[in-house]
Length: 262
Image (cartoon, rainbow, N blue to C red; front, side):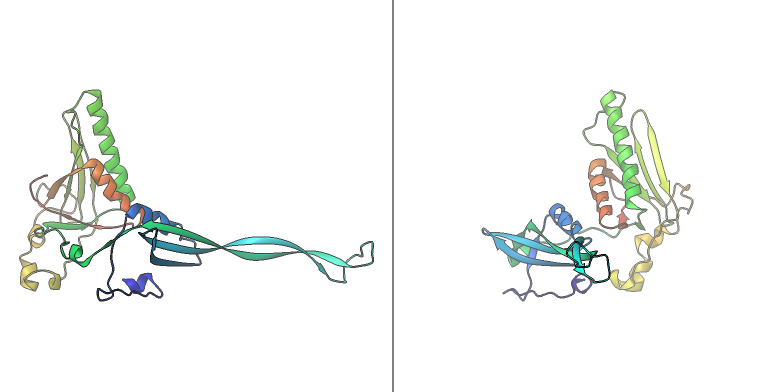
């Protein structure tokens, strides 16, 4: 990972040259966006007034038109008999931009207590459609439900719940249902990536008994079958925030579990 991001890097610490940081994604994203057209960029960990910072130093080049008068001896004479020619030289001027991102340095004892949440194996795993498109649909569903609640025609719930379902035949379904309406969008021809046996408990045998393998025997690629769907309920506003990662990358993998809704 580090080789694909940095041309050169140097990390030195008393903890086996490992430094763990807690970085706010909003300020970091804004800082990185300012480096999109940079000729070079450098990021370093430092302190300012006792506050740890990630400092991004960005060099950008912008054209600068300089008008100069150069003696040529081949053009028309001026009043003193000197001959000259007006010329324009295009030069690039380097601009340095510095972005500071406040961060928190995590001590090893704190990091040791961090771990991924324990979840069971997913029934379905699928690659989502373009996130901007998915976010647009989910935001529209959420707005419609909220508008209905405010008008008094539906259940005035404080949170809007979306139903998200997928199968192992490339189908994704998003829907919302209230007292007065029911709307649904279905995507087909998506991809269900194959699992790596080395990443599944039990290897080849574990993969053969994996929930997603069993789900492949159910449902259909046109999304019309009632079988083979794994579904969850999600908060509409929170899901919209998750979909905002599409500004950084266009695709993510979603795992759907046929577990009780929360």
